[in-house]
Amino acid sequence: TVNVSVLRVSEIYREAIVRNSPALILVHNHPSGNPMPSPEDINLTRTMLAAGQLLDIQLVDHLIIAQDGWKSLRELGLGFD
Image (cartoon, rainbow, N blue to C red; front, side, top):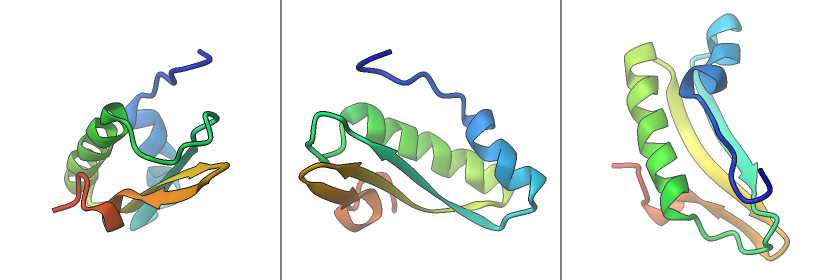
């Protein structure tokens, strides 16, 4: 939709599995212009990390790109332990 994306974790990891990738970086944009992660972004990151551990595919980072800059959830310590 305009304000929400419906994602299935399996769809995100599918290409990494097909290509036998050991790691991936998740990137998405915020059309609002504000790169700060939403609670949904943080929850998705945690879900992706858990799935990656099961699949043995490292989630290196989750980046948010916006008009006002970009944010790394790893650098912000959000979702990454």
